Image 1 (cartoon, rainbow, N blue to C red):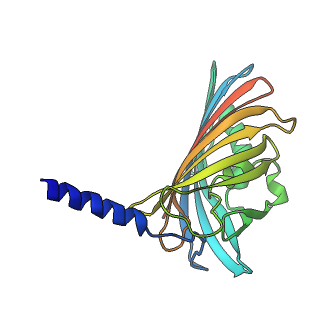
Image 2: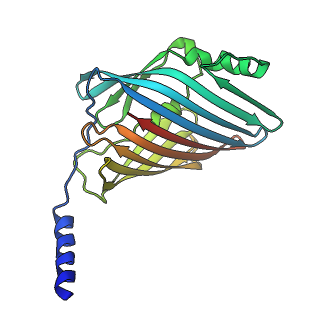
Image 3: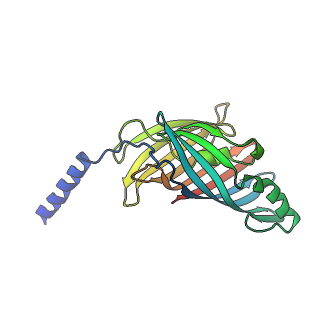
Length: 247
């Protein structure tokens, strides 16, 4: 028994010492389209409380790799959403005809997104260099949602258990400071945990962020992601849960 225990401890020691380092870099296959499904649940508690559930089906096409920057084209194929604001509820499904006034109102807002191409330029470390949104969409696209589709990757190789920090400026909320940790390697991919805080432009902490991403072992692009943000803005407490699946 003692020998078995010693062998186990020795094995664990060697695993720890010689643990594989991973130099994370996004490297998609250019020209190969991916299917991305985003599920978002937003709960707003305030003067006008509201719950909104939305599912978006998108095609993601990596079109160009240049100077360590990757150009992605995101095209929304279909949207399904349900909104509930106390006494009033409504829904919209881009694959069905709107029949009532509330559904038609949502259709007017969301239908302009269908088929539109949004271009995002990311570094191979996941930092957003540019986000090009068609003028016709106006404010119909949530940039915060788009920014959550990938996580910031570290400079240099990392072992399981090692962490790195990052910071992103957000027009709506302020600054999001994050600490990411390489949690584990599974058969499905590399698992990254992200924890962060949201600070308003005047320096007040107004919210938190937590996420768990599984990255493809070959491309280091998101395969699965679960991201939760909660923040207080103008007297409204907003909680948003986003789930991402890519195939």
